[in-house]
Length: 388
Image 1 (cartoon, one colour):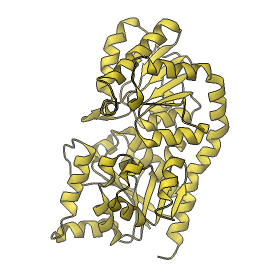
Image 2 (cartoon, one colour):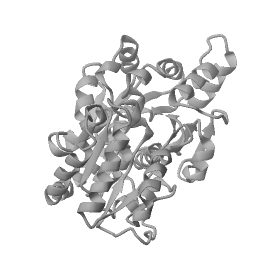
Image 3 (cartoon, helix red, strand yellow):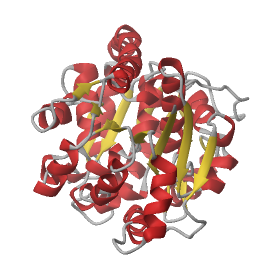
Image 4 (spheres, helix red, strand yellow):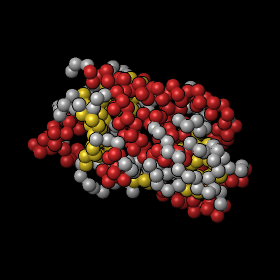
């Protein structure tokens, strides 16, 4: 048997890398199957060692990708022309009698991207044995008729948080709620930088994407500046700026470098370089607190019991926090709700004041949460073994 992972844009997004690593591990644990990755960023996958944990990485074509929508448009243009026998031949050769597993669950989080890929799914379903949507979230605004029809076509949908589950189970009965696969990602601990004080450093991740969702001009960045000033002036903790996505067109280093240059002279702020997702998790695990915009950076913190504040901009961050704490209030600060430069500081104050409670809550729930990640493998095994 062969399982082909698709809708992967490259491991320069270390959340994508984490999903490939953990999904491959789960599949091999529950299925007697090879796992192949169809990637639009093969050089990145080789750089971070994905070729060593899968049975192979297949490239669409080496290209300069500008955005996720560009990648999807490229795939559709290259492989979905009705008059192209060569494109059908490619898809048939790649997906015939396979388990075709879409790890692009984030594509359904945003209205602008949710409709992308539906035509590709329909083409793939002509040849594959089973079609699975893996670890997804979805915003209600994304549920157009076209997207609903696409969702109905999957043999299995695993949903990583309750808000999306309530939406999707009404559309496709073959839907199960699990935890994000990245909760079971292994960590690798490298030597710490000199000024990284273990268990007394605040890890901070900032994404350039948050600028697309903020309500005031540059207010998200201003909030990060104010927060860092507060930590330096009012606490004895140091700060580590941690990138999690390093794509040229969507690069955490852009805002991180700006923050680092502003505070470098304090000798209290450091920035990490680029590492694999497992190595990044190793650094995050040794933080006292974590503040993050990238979902899989915050999952690395949650899963290592680090009290975490999410700077959120989509349903996935709200749903995961609600699952963990019973409510996302006080655990997620929506970028859209920022109106003052002090909003992030105030939200972080709650995390500090409730540090012990939050850490203990995570210690209690994360082991069960990891079991829920692995439960996706059991659901996949059941669907694969079911007669078509």
